[in-house]
Length: 464
Image (cartoon, rainbow, N blue to C red; front, side, top):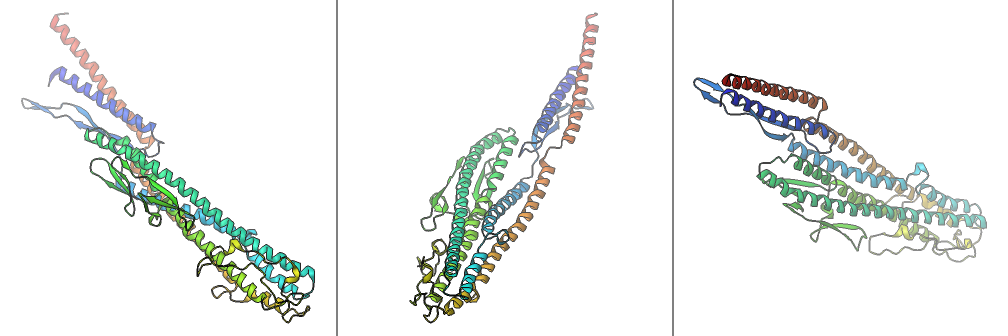
């Protein structure tokens, strides 16, 4: 359409297009600090032109759509990196607690009480009839038993704390999957209607990223705007508008919480996210520390009792058990030895220091002291076994710390890349604001000019 009316329509349409662009820019500025928000851009499209004689005239511009700027592949990479970072953070958190129990440099741990226990027999050998020295041996034995009891109890508390965190994580997973399932049909409906899905996709992507921080996830585009979310091993979490809730159940054998999906135990298959780290810390880190502690306790109990039986007490009677004997609940397992560690005698005179039945003999006291340098547990003496045990915990913490740094750098790098693509630059939006404002003002000026020309034409026609 030519003439003033056609020019007026072009100007008005331009006003509407630039007004829409200003609204998009304003929305970007408002959401500059909104987590998960993807920058939006107005997509202008030239209207089809028309011919009048040999001349071609344009029909102006229209705001075709508002497009969110995002990189779906980058989002998936960030989800995976977030899961890896959360996993190592949770694992390291648990292992740092374990390391605190056996922190010899801070006065914790068992090295000192083990040495004091064996040294007390060495001191007793200097005067086997001395009641004070005998009482010191009994006290050292009680201190040793208490230290093992406390270390075992502390490991149990860490295990309980990790279990509580696991249950909380499962609750959060279910909340997030429920929200994702609710958004799926909204995205699909908006996409089918040709409406903008930017805000809905931002919300869903942010929820998926949070979910990846809790459990390893795999996201598949269903083709209609909705997504299917599963764990890495294929356990369905979200399908269409349905979410499959995870549950926790107490394992009667281990006393720990396991994760179930529709009746299937998936605990061992969870490798990433906060859940994966909690499970790894509990079932590997804490469990191995408890096993080593129990093996050391069982070795000490057995060796001391065996040597004690070869001596004689102050009254010349055959030596009995110094510690309460440990009876394994199952073959090849020393589970519970540290928790049950206890001194069997209360009378210092019952300590079997003599090797020949005479009161002044110190042979068995020396033999008991020498157990400190005897291979008792896995071919190692108690000190070496304990040192290697503690060093192993330190190695695990050191490795996890290095992994934490590495995964943190990866996440930061991906977040920076995402910010460069999808993030809002206030400087750029300020420039856009000026650009669209100038275009809007120019179109408004066109309207004013055409209005003036139209009025002049009307006046000329009417002779006014």
